[in-house]
Length: 371
Image (cartoon, rainbow, N blue to C red; front, top):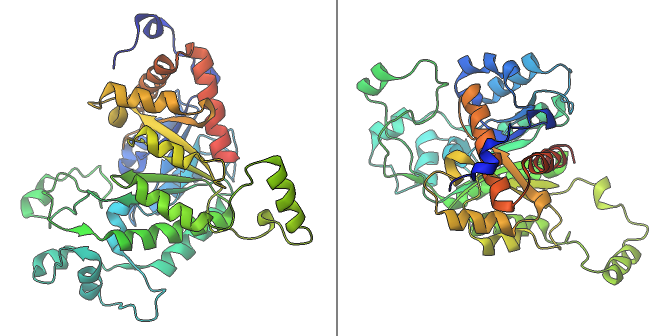
């Protein structure tokens, strides 16, 4: 999709505040030093696996002016376990759960890797779900405006194969360990049921702490919605003034929801959304008790994607529910450029004047993160 000449000729209004709703600079820690000089006002930095939870925390502690995250800080840390790594979490909440490494992986991966000892050997000792949730709860307490992310479901992802000696010899030492790093993919996927267990535990934690969530979804938008619908059950919003008055009368004398831990987050971002328009309508039903936002990136949504599909989705959204992101693993000039690019693309699709659009996107991000 091309940007019109009129839009492209306008100087980008960085002065209004430009906010990256989803990025991964701690995957390349050497780039973190460039964050203070970036034009972007703030970065919402995701954790995805065991290797980067502490790195996201350290980045926020080292770069933020305030001891606790405030609206004028440069970093909003996000703590979450990505579905690509969900097999590394062992669900110890069930009484009959096994804590044997090979038995765990054999149970949560498909096809079963029971006859592939080399693959099983290279997998890490799984982390207990209860331990991970406790650690994440403590991190969220440390940063009162931190998010839960990146979490979600993915039906297409296959685990990378075991490291070969050639892979090890050629690996980029600047990259934080734990990602694919160009390895050939194995035939193994994480069973969706296990991904749901890990996702629901994190969504419940976000509900308990009343934090926003950044959600990954690949070929799984319906499955994500089903998980949310299950957690929302019994907390649906009234659809009319009469129904709201009736609901308030019924709840008179009872503790209100906002005085009790809830099982769902108050705000959700479907990051780099690639689903259809029809799915958006489900997420935006007025009865849903969570406010759902949709973010878009140049690298995912405007890179080879059918222009009409992206345009139709963006046009169908309420103006106040659109966010922008870079979704890349290196901070600095490239991240700023991608934010500039995607903001211009969205303004073009929506017919917004550039300053008007950037101001709207900034307001949306602040509402999504801080409520």
